[in-house]
Length: 85
Image 1 (cartoon, rainbow, N blue to C red):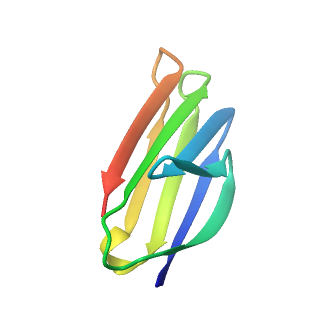
Image 2 (image 1 turned 90 degrees about the vertical axis):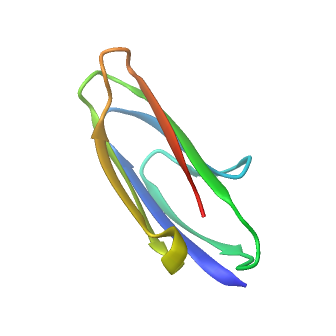
């Protein structure tokens, strides 16, 4: 087993971040979750807020999942994305 270390930030809005189908973070927060190094995982997120609100997601561990994203929500007030590791 290895540890997934992830942190999120959102200005004026709401965010949910999922590991596979399980919500692990809400809004601005940090989490450490045990994962099996022999499996493949999907991390996905959904963001809602005022247009131009910025948000960020940082995954610092494990090495194969390292990820950094900083974005702004568009005019529609929603954004989403995902990665696989």
